[in-house]
Image: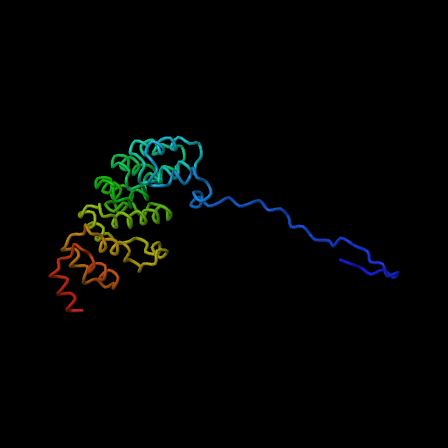
Length: 247
């Protein structure tokens, strides 16, 4: 900046520029860690050799073990070790991993906070799904639901939705699920389903649903349930053709 003095001689002055306060960089979200760290990238990459994943699973860094636990290429023996990790979030990723050994999923289903992840895993053994249906969701102990706190009710119903959507769910559990009314329908609103129709939606979309149950769901009052039942591959083609002609 130049200022003209009365004598005509210019004088240089330093223009004041306010400094912005230094702001510490926010930590990168975990899902973007692989973009910033090649070690995290290797832990999550499906083409990483098993020997490297085995070594990375012993890392002290949480994000590295997190990537290994969710990696479908991680060897079963490594997933077994990570299922006993000191951080529950690592164990939860093992429970989500579809390559997790069935006996590990069975053990995780009995641990608090892991049942939601296990309930949606297609590799979950059927007996573990039945156990969760009986002891966690209380489908077979309806009187006990009224004794639970609201938070436990909501969690149980979330597990119920995941169980009935799991293709490994035994048919008898799907039939039993349709016979138990929802004690509180408001908890399903967050996933955008019609009140009272959430379990039916899961059953109608499950390929393990018995054909006779699907035929009954074709007459359901919910258009969503009817549409999913008609699209289910287990529905006999002859029944589907007749239903399409009528609609």
